[in-house]
Amino acid sequence: QVTLKESGPALVKPTQTLTLTCTFSGFSLSTSGMRVSWIRQPPGKALEWLARIDWDEDKFYSTSLKTRLTISKDASKNQVVLTMTNMDPVDTATYYCARTPPGGCSGGSCYVDYWGQGTLVTVSS
Amino acid sequence: SSDLTQPPSVSVSPGQTARITCSGDALPKQYAYWYQQKPGQAPVLVIYKDSERPSGIPERISGSSSGTTVTLTISGVQAEDEADYYCQSADNSGTYVFGTGTKVTVL
Image (cartoon, one colour):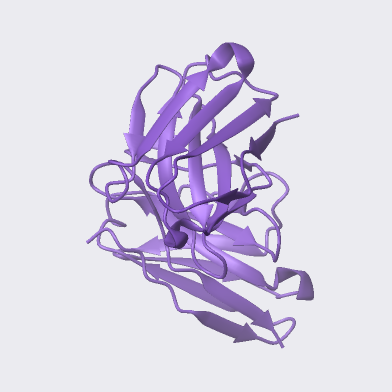
């Protein structure tokens, strides 16, 4: 059974750095073709993809946010960590981690098949 | 442009057909995917590779592609289909792009 769960602070102050952890089970990020992404959704708004890390340590970032994001993994702990610097109230959102399975990418586009429940992060002083 | 544009809302009576479009310049070159999101829940994948259905997704949900537009079709709409729907693809640099989202209301 594949599960993912996000954890981290519910409230951060402007200019602070946010660190979120995705703890997963039911799959290994050491498996060829496995990928984990972070995606966020401001209240009442659309989904926004943030970053992805692959089984082979390749990392990809949103063009608009890449200067603020760092993604890393600890495959032995089944965890993926996202840090986002210089938080602003517009970064208030539910943050999801999600899995792309082997075979989930074709011609450069990939889908996610399992999502965590999401964690709401509010940025406020 | 890497944007994916969807109509903000679609309203449909039970038993009728709902069609949700998603338009973007990259769609002729990249596969599209569709997610259903109900209030307070994480999205669920309902279509991958333009028209493939994951296991467990009812046959009345289907996808199609033509040029710069992909379409999600829900036939015989039921009350349980009321949700937000998002298309997703990739831009030229390979990063994921989500559509603007469509709220489906079952009248």
